[in-house]
Amino acid sequence: MNFDGGYTMTIAGKAVEAAETIAVINPATEEVIAQAPSANRYQLDDAVAAATAAFPAWAALTFAARRHYLHAMADRIEACKEDLMRLLTREQGKPRAGADWEMTGSIIWCRETAKLDLPVEVVEDSDVRRIEIRHTPIGVVGAITPWNYPVLLALWKILPALLAGNTMVLKPSPYTPLTTLKLGEILRDVLPAGVLNIVSGDNELGKWISVHPGIGKVTFTGSTETGKRVMESASGTLKRVTLELGGNDAAIVLPDVDPKAVAKELFWAAFQNSAQLCVAAKRLYIHAEIYDAVARELVDYARTVRTGDGSQQGIDLGPVQNRMQFEKVKDLLADARAQGAKFLLGGDVPDGTGYFIPVTIIDNPPEDSRVVVEEAFGPVLPLLKFDDIDEVIGRANNTVFGLGGSVWSRDTEMARKVAERLETGTVWINEIHIFSPHATFAGHKQSGIGIEHSHHGLLEFTNAQTIVMKKVTEAA
Ligand code: NAD
Image (cartoon, rainbow, N blue to C red; front, side, top):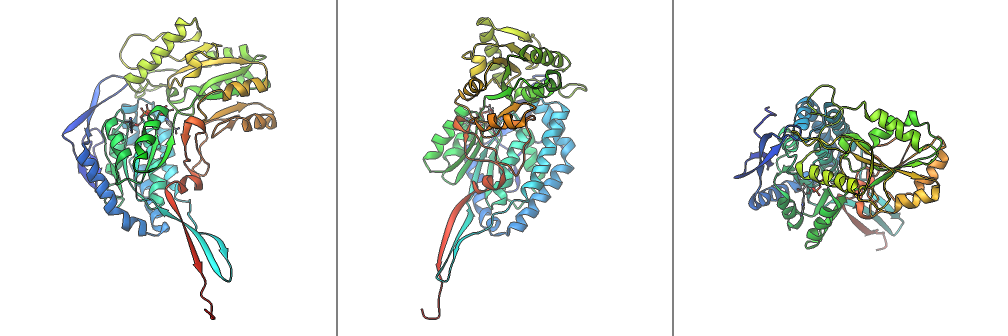
C-alpha cells in the first residue's frame, strides 16, 4: 500500500475520490504534500446511506463478534504502524517519539476497548415481573475530529461506537486528513462494507454532518466555540451529542516538591506535542516559597529541548500544526509583550520556513491577561505565583473551562484534597497525561458534554431500553 499518495475516502467499503480537493501542508516545511478529497453533500449522503445499510447486520452481531473485529483492527493498524507514523509526522508535524506514542496508544486502545461490556441490568426479578435495562445502539454516528492527535482521537470515537453496535461516518480535520484517510483504507477489508465510512472536507462538511437527518448522534472533539455550533446544529434533529472541547488546565505545585526533580515532568506536562494537547498544563501555579527555584530549573531544562522538523533526528518538539494556529499564538505573544510581560525564555518568533514558535515561558503575568485566560494551544506557558491553598484553588477554578488539572506534592493526602476541589473532569497527582480506556474522560463546564472511555463512555453510544415483563403464572 502506498502511504505517500492516493488518498481516497472510504464509503461503503470502496475508495471514493472527489471533484474538489484540499491542499495538505507539512507544517515544518510549508510544502503542499498532498491533495485530499473534499466531499460534497451528495457524497456525505452516500456515506450516511452506506452506514444506514450496514447498521442492521452489524447491530445484530454478538458482542463477542464485534470484539473480534476490534482485535482485527488492532492487528492491521499494528502492521501499518511505521507507515502511519511517518505520515503522521509529515502532516501533523510531531516528532517520531510523539508519533510512536500516538500509534502505540491507538493499538492499545483497540485491544483494551474490546474488553468493555454492555450487560443487561436486571432491576427487578420477582414472582410477578422482570424489569431489565438494555443498551441498544443508536444507529449511524457522525464523528468530527481535530488536528492535534488525528489517529488516536478518531479511534477514541470509532472503537466504542462500533463495539456498541453502531456504524459511523467520520470526518477528520481538513488540516490533517491523510492518516485518517489511510486508516479507512487499511480497514476496508477488515470491517464489513459501510460500517466505517471516512469522508474528508472542510468545516462545512462538519456542519452537514451535524444537521444530517440520517445521523443519530454526533461525537465531536475540537474547540469550545465549534462545539457550541455543533450542539446548535444537532438540535434540529435532537441528535445525541458528546463534545470533548478546549481546556485551560492548571498545574498546582505545592511548596514541598523538589524543584530540580519535578522540572522535567512539568515541562512535558505543558509542552508535549508543542502544547497542542487539550489537557496540557496551560497555567502553572507555583508556591511562592519555591517559585524562583522551579522557574530556574524549568528554564534550564527547556534550554536542552530542541524544536524543529519532526522528521529529523534529535528533534523533541515540532512546529505548530497550521498557519491559523501559528498566527493565533503569535498574536497572543504580541499581546503579552505589549502588556509588558517578562519572558524567561522565548517570546520572539524568528522569520523562516515552518510554523515554529520557540518554547516560551512567561514570568508571573497578571491573572487577567490573555496569556493566562485564553487557551494558547501552542508552546507558551505562564508561570503564576501563589501563597495560599484556598487562593490557588479559587484561581484555578476561575475559568469557563473544566477539562483537567494536576497537583504536585510529596504530601499525597494534601494533594488529593486539592484535587477534589478542582472543577475538572480529570486531575492527575504527581504525574500527568496518563489515560486509560477504563477511566472516564470528560470535560466539566464549557470543556464539554458527556464522557469518553470506560463503561460510561460506551453507554454514550447507546439508547437505554427498559423491558417490563409481567410473568405468566399458572393461574393467569
Ligand atoms: P476546531 O473546533 O477548529 O475543529 C475541530 C473539527 O471541527 C474539525 O474537523 C473541523 O473541520 C470541524 N468543524 C469546524 N467548524 C465546524 C462546524 N461549524 N460544524 C461542525 N464541524 C466543524 O478545533 P481544532 O482547532 O481542530 O482543535 C483544537 C481544539 O480542540 C482545542 O481547543 C483543543 O483544546 C480541543 N481539543 C479537545 C480535546 C478534548 O478531548 N477535550 C482533544 C483535543 C483537542
